[in-house]
Structure formats: structure tokens, C-alpha cells
Image (cartoon, rainbow, N blue to C red; front, top):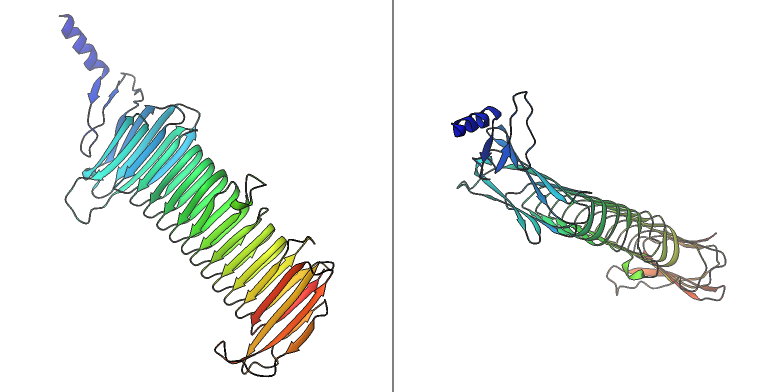
Length: 405
């Protein structure tokens, strides 16, 4: 009789237990349904939205310093945020045409927490739409892989590595080490103190308010750096370093130096110290304020440099294969100047060297065919204020202007 009463009470309260985590059944969990309509939250549950979508929720205890490992062979977006709890909370939204054939595994392991997904059907052209939103302890390591989908990380300190086969990387308020790559999509890194590297095979890279030795790389896209500084002012090996296979580069400030290059696009540096190395295969180079040495080269475009400071470690080399070159320097800058301006046949009288420092100039009389198209040269030389720094300027079919300020 007591057993029958207990069963009746359980049925009245609505006690249920469910198992499994594949596409057709519920996750393991416990819920209580009360007569007055309240449902107690479950740590492990599924909410079935419709025939094509379900939401899986999981929660694991996890101490700081552990690792979250994600391997999404199905693809899918990943959002990971740090919080001040020793818990990993996961919400997976699984949808798309073939959602029922997707299997997700959520496991607590010695290293932390693992999430894996795979397609279990037999279609060649299957389709899915999956997203993970995860909360982790604010000091946690991440190892991420997705066959395709955006990745967003915020408010985390640790080692964060991973790759997505396509999708944006959005990174904010991070601390530690990054090694993150997308095969196609924008990379945005803001308000962080990190070392390492972020990379896209196609898309822009934007970094703002970043400290550390992190490098940015894109195979094709614009690069924009604003307030990016090295954390150790005495270590100039980790200067602002940017490489792009195609796209403009914009650096707002590089107080420990800048080494930037692009296969095609304009380069603009607003402010730099120590040194600037800038190279583009096609586009203008503009350096608005540099207190240090400069080596700037473009295969086609204008070069404009404004130098400040009068120290002894400020050698200058500016080269354009086709374009104007303008150098503005302090009146008391100590330098030994060599300028070579080449003009090709048919361009006579179109280009000149102008200097506020009174260079000695000469023009060749004979056409020189050693470099291909016959050309003549206008040269300018001079030594000023002790001649301590070397200033070399070369261009083809362009003007040279040296101004004092």
C-alpha cells in the first residue's frame, strides 16, 4: 500500500528522468513539475523548438586553469565568455535541415570539458545550423576547431588556440596567449593584453587598445592597428608587425617600432618611435610622425614621411619605383643626403628635385639602358649638421621634395 501511495505522489508531482544525447532523444536530466505551474531548472536538459531545432543545455563543475576543448566536425558558431564561477555552462542550439542526424557529445575529462560533434547520416550534401554559447571560469584555456562558423571570445585569461574553416574572429578583453586562425573572415581584437598571433586567409584585421607581442596577418584584406603597444618597453623585438597578401595597412601608434608589409595596398602610420619598416607592392606610403629610422619602399605610389627628433640613430631610405617622394625633417637634423631620380625616355623635364637644404645637383647626359627602359638620372647630394645620419632617396618618374621644419 505504501508503494502505491509513493507512486501516486511521484506521478502527481511530475517526476521524470530522461537519457541520451543524440539527435532523436532527450539528454540525461531530472525535472520536477509542480501543480502551480513552476518548473525547476535542470542543469542538463533539452528544449525542442520544432522538428528541425533543439536546444541542449549542460553544466559542469570546472576549476580555473582547466581547458575547454571543442571539435565541431559539423561546423557551427562558437561564443565563449568568462565569468566568476567555477562552472562551465553550455547552451547548444542545433538546427538545420539535417539536425536529427547530428550528434553532440559533452564530457567532463581530467583536463576540463570536451565538446564534440559529428554528422551520423549518409547524405553527401547534408546541411546544419549549430551554435554554442558557453560560459567558462574567467581563467581558462581554450582549444577550438570548427568546420565553419564565427568564433567570439571575451573576458578570458589563458591560452587560447584554434581554427575555423570560415567565419569571423571577434576577440575582446582577453589576456594570455593567442594562436587563432580563420580560413576566411574578419579578425577583430580589442581591449586585450596578449601575445601570439591572429590570422585570416581572407579578410580585414583590426586591433584596438591592445598590449603585448601579438602579431596580425591576413592573406587578403585591410589591416588597422589603433593603440597597439608592446607590454615591455625595453623589448623592441615585439614591435607592431603586420603582413598582408593584399590590402591596406593602417597603424595609429607604434611606440616601439613598426614592421609592416602588404602585397598590394596603401600603408599609413600616424605615429611611430624607434623605427619604421614599410613595404608595399603597390600603393602609397604615408608616415605622419616618426621619431626614429625609416625604411620605406613601394613598387608604385607616393612616399611621404615626416620625421621628428634629431638623434644619431635615424637613417632614412625611401624608395618608389614610380611616384613622388616627400621627406620633412627638422632644420638641425644631422644627415648625409643622396638622392637619385630616374626618368624614362619621353619624360624629359617632367620631374625635379627640390630641397630646402640646398643640395648639389647633377643630370646625366646619356641614356642608360642597363635597367631596361632607357633612362637618365638627376642626382642630389649634400652633408648637413655634421652628416651623422644617412638619407637615401630613390624614385623613377617622380618628384623628390625635402622640406625642413
